Amino acid sequence: MYLTGFADEASQNLEVQIRVTKELGWNAIEARGICGTNIHDLEEGEFNDACHMLAAADVHVNCFGSTIANWAKRIEDPFDVTLAEVDRAIPRMKRLGTKLIRIMSYARCKGEEQHAAERFARLREIQARFADAGLTPVHENCMNYGGMSWRHTLELVENVPGLKLVFDTGNPAITLDPAKAGGATQDPLEFYRQVREHVAYVHIKDAALEGATEIYSYPGEGHGRIPEILKALIEDGYDGGISIEPHMASVFHNPDAATASEDESAAIYAEYGRRLMGLLQDAGAMPSPYVV
Image (cartoon, rainbow, N blue to C red; front, side):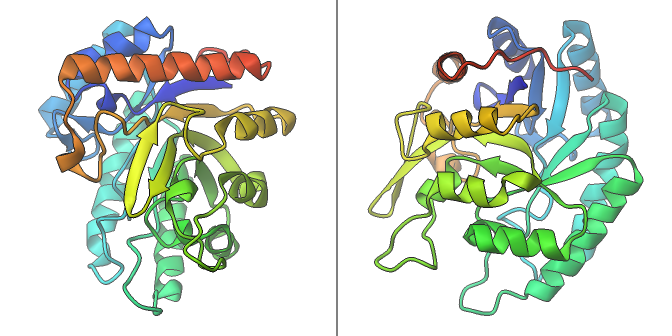
């Protein structure tokens, strides 16, 4: 088990991302935004600069936090847009020695029709392209088709051979469960237990839904059931990565929510990492450095 995180929540400045990561004693980041641009969309010169900075600091990129098929992409959009992102990401992952890339299953549609067959077909092609390159896409239960419930996630797994998952602890706590009456949210621990055999990676986020407002908090303070999920992961013999995604100083899908200064963001990120390490220690886990 190793620790990492969406370091762009500490800062969009890669130098700060690296500094905070090393302060935590970690040697990996889940790369998403650098100066406001996703890592697979950086200009070539900017990407080269990032590679040199990471190598000089001996910090690795364990996963690309890509925007491929994410909540901002519609299933009705041309598939060529997605394939271009895939084709840009593959050589960059190989250069950095990165094996994992976070993907999704497109934004939910309004109404009952979700175009499931088209989603499955597209994800099969995405999965195949990465697998042919020796890389592993992991689907996140976010604001997408698979995140609608654990049943939808399992439906994806059944229809996309070889698909692995990144399980996010916080997203179920702020997502209504279509199988429950009265506007009840999903149960994160139940979600994990239903999909755990397919989980290859974990995002730690804690949150609660108050009315229509998403409230993000330090791990263990929200409704993400993080201590229980960490205990379950250990009991299940999980030995993969655990990545923090605080959403407390900035929310990737809601720029208007970003109110903290860079110093405050970095401090929150570091404190979040320390609290996660404390929870893991309480659960009897001893994470190791990330190994390429």
